[in-house]
Length: 227
Ligand code: G3P
Image (cartoon, rainbow, N blue to C red; front, side, top):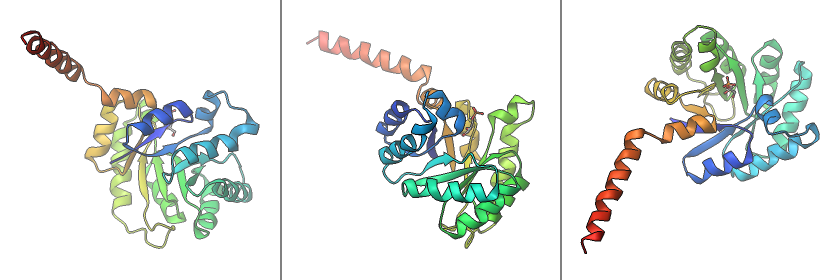
């Protein structure tokens, strides 16, 4: 399973990229707002992230509400950098926009997916990625991981050749809050987990790793002292 980072914070992206295990970035309006960025700087900010990421995919979300608006904004966002993926929330308008944009070679990440039928509709319209949300489903007392499993099985049952420029529909596990969400997503074969930086750091750490490093250091110090 590939790791994306779910943030618009340049420092977090830079740090996570330096680990050498990042395969992409996802952003959304809330994540951009959290950076304190202004409306006028949004596009430059997305271009900056895209440039930092080389050829790794970077999702930038459209704010248009009509099919025509999404098509226009989608074309524009995709023209900003070759690795920008246009993020659209699942709805009738975005399915129609995806159908047009995918035929033009624009990659779409269909977001706010909470069910297998939504994911199947998105993939059939031409989405390059579908993003089922795990944590927000848990938040309302549902089982986000079970719903993710339904999406993984449903999308995996079919061949998406001819639907988009890459002939695949990858599942981005989104709204990831814990290392266990990452474990469960990988065990069921989700393609990608997009993880906020805080949760990514939690994935890296384990108390027994810290204890083990401390005891190795202490024992090595004894070896050095005995010289
Ligand atoms: O990419 C969007 C998604 O990951 C949001 O996560 O934690 O705000 O539910 P969260």
